[in-house]
Length: 260
Length: 332
Image (tube, rainbow over all chains, first blue to last red):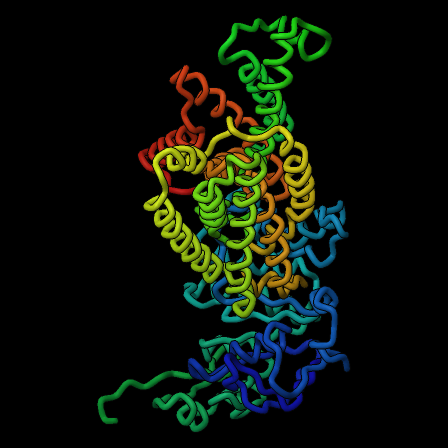
């Protein structure tokens, strides 16, 4: 379980996340939503161990993550940044292998079990067909799957994603969210992701955290959080909330009228 | 890409042997292949012995070591700075050593003792390294700020070199100028041992960090979430590869393009896994620089051209060909 207690963090001494407390239970699928600049990514980075808080603590199973050894944290929690630089044309299977880094010995050479693990993950993420290609030659959707595969290679119980489907088409988006759902339900991973698409958030997440101005505006199940009043207040735009006829999950439709 | 590593390694070993024989046989004084073998392994007439064992062999070793050092540190800078166009000099190291050497020439220290020019060049390089280091402590060794501070340091040092040149008398000017162009002919043999030890041990240590550098190319956030203290690691790798560069530069001057071109070629041939790439880039540099050095001795004989001029011309042509090649995107 992750416990966030009175967390404040930010950049250059300016708090972007302001005194947040919340609990994230095991095996949940958390979506962090909110406007641009609400502090979603900052919160995610801080709870991934990448941004030391100004005050407050983050505990994983009772241990403060900022008092943990980095290499130990890397075996409990993995993180996929949004704009990860890929400057060299690595071969896809080598690239996925980098995710095994925290599990490797001092010389950081891959062993048989690492190769086996990578095979499994490539099957699971459907990345095997381009295993031998350069990562720079892949399409956006394919590349994102490879990045997820690399993150999975880290074999952690908690996985944090920063906008894993931004600028992907709806087909690639659903296939990635389906992967995350299987990870969550069948492999019992705790998944925490920031997400802009409210409908995908409603469809796939078990709980949502709606952030506004560095604080938690509301959290709960998608049906509780995605109501037109709260969404209109936070996003400052008019919306209609309907129910998806297939999944019975809430669907948010922005209304563009000239009356306002 | 089929990665036929053993075959590629064998080809490189053959090329290395050819480079060795070429270096031993070229130059003033006719020496045959048999004479060379005799001089190396048993005994030969005194003249041949001196030429091979006292002149050509040490110079070949220096070229091998310097080439390996420049190429491997270039490869590492490209990795930690996440920039395929970085080279050992991007971080201002050559600027610093040029400045140090120029001061030594201006003060006439070269006449006092052999050690002063390489020593001042080395000190200059160390000053440049610490300037970049100090500028980046607060910035957490982020690649952009490192490149920027390196480029700034280079400009400041080269301005100061120009200033020294402007007030230097013409005889000193010429020897300083030849040094700056990169030159293996004027080194002192006593330097060979310490410089070789520093560079070879440095390369061996850096070879262990191949996978670490792979992960660092994924950016600070990913590397940190894979359990690495990124800023600290980049700092140590930067200091170690800078030391290699500084050692190479202090005894053979500024030799351009080796550190940029060799890793580039090897990235194409063996891929981008730095565990393989670092040692093989070093190997490629160890072949390329002796060949260039021998050519620079013989092409315009009896005049010897600075080897840095030759490597820069070859390197420049190489990148022009890359640019002209249709279809493929430039770089990598």
